Image (cartoon, rainbow, N blue to C red):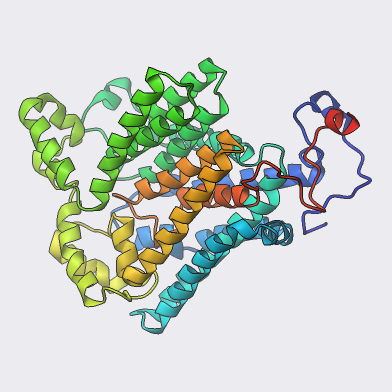
Length: 473
């Protein structure tokens, strides 16, 4: 097997693909491509399987094991790195000639160097090293698949978007079969009904959110497909009652709709609404003072909405953001102990910390439920600034790509933005083995291998991305 992802020049094309040469490239018609797709599907099903068996997500050791510590998840991380590693040599060649992306990789290297350095003063050096190794393996997988695999397809990031949409449908099928099949319609309408106590709902919500954005981009002219996909995925988010993630996904969807829409009232309206909802996410990331004031205002005037907004837990629970406010107040003094250097990459939430935090907030928190705060606790102000510099530089590059390839550029920009939104009330930073990292990271490296200049040409040795008719013409 050619592990570099190379494809023999004298390959014969499967006749079954000849009818599709208007949209299938030589690489996408190859057996190596099809085997990789099969591998990705099997990997995604294996990724979802542990989520089916979770029965008590409030047990801190069980959650920690599900997140990163179990043997199954270690094998998943290694296999993801293996799938990307097959294409890593080609990805390195593709990225090495792109001088315009060098500053982005310098910033990424700076963040990785600082994260590794924090293990020297980490409160649990072994834990820091293990979690840093996980991050490195995830990067190997994302770089190889993004710049080595998807960058060779004709549609690059759009091909990934199509696969992410398929992945979201698989996740929804698993959710329905394992959790929703025996639920009655009246139960689903009950404001107090929720799966969050026995199901890690955020993992399904991540898939639905990224799939929803992909659907907006994939079907710009097929309105029925776009509307149906968006409605179904949006309904899943509503059923799972991920309130802040719903707002973040809606903000991202409105922004990308405004970018792709023609000039007119809808474009302006979508952009303004997207900015307003984006500001909500920024406020939540910084403590949620404005959001809480608005929630109190709505509760005073629209009391009938409180059971739905609080999932039946009452106004006090809503105004504490499901207990996040007291948790954040408890964690800030720990940040003050080491504000610049942190407690060590991924090491703040070590086993003894669970009991300490539980005594303060009276509920079993295993992360800060704010990725930016978790990054501050792990690598300090220096680590957070390095990561944000890398992320914002990447987002700026995607906007430059959008001038050449509008759909790919804006898609990846919004996915990167959605990653930040996910960290406003959830923790992806420092807990990287989650769908937003995998989807956003792979998409990012796919566009980094693509020039932001109109004169882009395939690299020497890359798969030909022209169709058969174009080559003969």
